[in-house]
Amino acid sequence: MSQDHLSSTFAALADPTRRAILARLTSGEASVTELAEPFAMSLPAVSKHLKVLERAGLVARGRDAQWRPRQLQAGPLKEVDQWLDHYRRFWDGSLERLDVHLPKMQARGKRHETPRKKRSRKK
Amino acid sequence: MSKSSDREFAITRVFGAPRELVFKAWTEPKHMAQWWGPHGFTNPVCELDVRPGGAYRIVMRDSDGVDYPVKGVYREVVKPERLVMTVDVSEHPAEWHDMVMPNHAKGDANPAGAMLQTVTFEEQNGKTKLTIRMHFESAAIRDAFVKAGMNEGWSESLDRLAGALSQAGEK
Image (cartoon, rainbow over all chains, first blue to last red):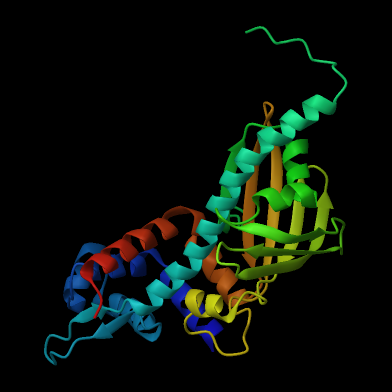
């Protein structure tokens, strides 16, 4: 179930229009018409994207029955972000440490090597 | 359709060292134990049987003494160019799984599916370009990642979204 949960979030985020819709909703709720405006897209097309976002739990409908504004739901995004952030942090830290460790290996290697240096290159 | 290879979750770094050395840092336990893991972590266990089908097991320990075991099997070993290995974090503490994947089902230790990691070492004028690619064996997640272009706009826009969300505050 959780895998479906995460993958439906990823699938929803995989489309640039849907990401743009989410970005728009970060500045506040909006009606379907308002959401359609910047995309030069038909209302049914936008509704289709919204349905995918709703199914993934990323967008919810507001209470106003006439206006039916859409709102951003932060939960699934935070979940994905946390999950990715773990890997970003892991590799940022590891590769910085590797960068520090490599010169130590080089220094140690030079000490043990036979002193057969390459001639220094001219510019 | 674009190549999947440049559309997966990829991290690239250039190191000022020859690639034989960088490869060695990845394949000799005494070296790998010195750098694997976030800052402040140590690796009390680092066992690497670097050959196709060989297993590895690394236990990272954080500053509070909590262990985070990672294990897997090497699928490809091409010295000094390429390593492909599975990555299994199912032995990470339950708290970690709860934090990273708050909605994961109990008993589903690898909610993201098993991961495959490809590490390539490219020579560039005496420097080494290292690329780490994560593949997700769960088809649905992997496809979503490929479509999303993980290493490009997607994570960026997600960062922006996350930033906007945290500013907007929580209910």
